[in-house]
Length: 277
Image 1 (cartoon, helix red, strand yellow):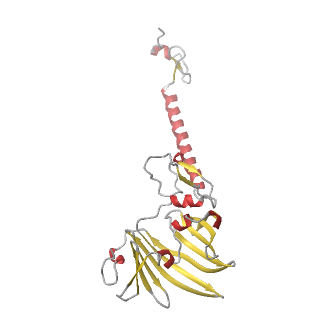
Image 2 (cartoon, one colour):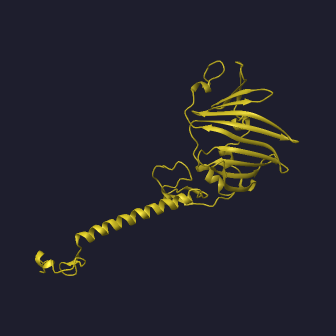
Image 3 (cartoon, helix red, strand yellow):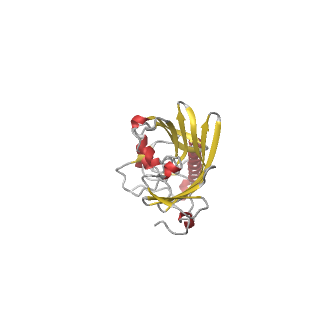
């Protein structure tokens, strides 16, 4: 057995020389060990700073197009497509007219939200604006249309639509198939965009709109109009819609403000105070 030199013999070694203990083993002096630990720590900190700096540079780049991996069975904790906390859990897709429907179906919409919209109709140089308020919570939707000619309120619950002039207490009830909330608001639903036949879609791409990433879809409607819709990646809601006739803009619909807080239950009552359910 080979023993380490005693303290008296260790003085013969240079302060800068390592102490050899046993066969092929080197024991560093305390000062060298301290320097090595400090150097390693500084290197690790510098590497982390560089990684975070590089990440900040890439934060404004176009988001990666992803959909959940069907083989991933853990609870889905990813709030949006743009936040890739665990990239290995996802499959990467190209955004095309053929795949945009699948990507839209992965977007999550909040359970409760309110939107303030402006609907602008353009004709022969003239412009007419209508303010629209859109409230959704608990499976019910309330729409207030401040039309200059006739302001009206709409309440959608289950398979029924209730409508009445603003300020009145008498209302009418219709089947949901006759009136649709997104038709009333003149804003398409994300679900309807996801269901579009790819042959009607001419373009699908990511577009930065008012500092938020959106999925832009250009398509032809059944009436022959060319429309362009922008779906927010963060909320999964359509935030802008444009309609063109022979390349001329005739309808411009866009979200002015939005909130995702719980809404007052009184918003979803009929004008006489009764519940639609």
